[in-house]
Length: 504
Image 1 (cartoon, rainbow, N blue to C red):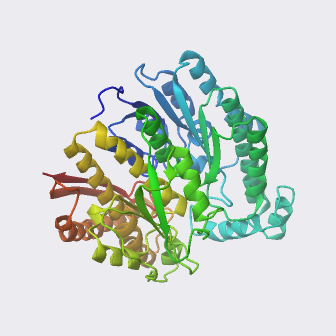
Image 2: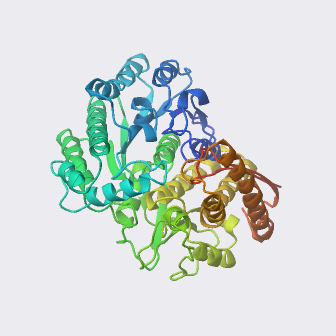
Image 3: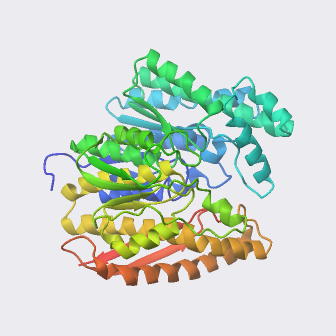
């Protein structure tokens, strides 16, 4: 165990209260023995209820003295969360207040000059939020228009008008883009003035071309003009940002390194995944740079990617079409490999995972993920690998093994069993009852919660009983598990999976 370095204590203001942004980061902290302080739940808001901006600023101003590092989501600080960041400001004054919210970081820097500050900003995605079935057609149209190669900030408004987007919706979307871009320009200025030590700007759901490319070019020009290339990164992703910044902080604090040796499936490193604006190779490289790791001889990482174009598993199931998965390209992997399933958006490729389970003991892997976008998957795998390396030296061998296995089991329960298997049954059940998968009222949410608990608990118990005895961390044996599953928001998109593995 590390005896010289002081324990790392971090304050974390998450993007929102969804499990991937809150629970997952706290759980990863436990893997590395990092103490993480988060705001009270009532300050974070939930779903369409924004966070309490004044309350959050007060929380930041009163951080305990032992906190050495702050990881802060600018979207929560300035808007009240990710969904709130996609909503238009009602007027120019509201837009200005969003930028002015960054001033609390300047005050914090003056009061705590030795506090390290890492910030995450999410560049607005190509389209709007989908909160009901009626929003889907608007989402699809705006996404298509905003990601056309010839679309620029100057032509976007006219394209939306010609595309039949109602003027009110189009104006709201454009105002949100303008306000959020102003916040990110202001955040880069705070890096230049040493208020923020490191800024991670993640481009949420987009494509290779479109209006977001022009916005990124503006930001790149500002970054280059101030020679901030090593302190500001623009890359694909969003929800994995907190995990990456945690891994970066831990590796730097304990002066650890990480090397990853990647191998890609038949789609190859030049593949561009759905909702991404960079190749898998460039995405992997940018995330390695963010956490301070490198590509080279080290942990073996298999990135599952196919030659065929893949679709959105959530929307595919929602439309009533069964997802059969793709099984091509599975090469023989070692039992200690890390696996990033980047082949399907919003879930794991079920046929690939089923073949993987036959070939290697899943709880013997170094890491696994297959959730949401390719960037989400790659970022969480790299963060887990980095924090596990720290945990091996900071924690006892037993504690390190237990926390690692609990994380692995959580990812299989969520990314594979829920997103690729059980969620499809829930979507079918909701559709048969005339319920929206995007917004469940009280009775509908209660019924879906009961079905979720029944289906996912049974599926995970079978998974654990089948695979726990096949191999876990050398020197330890899994004796049991405890699992609880719930819907964190009144929709069927995500699950809160709280899984603990017992070992001897």
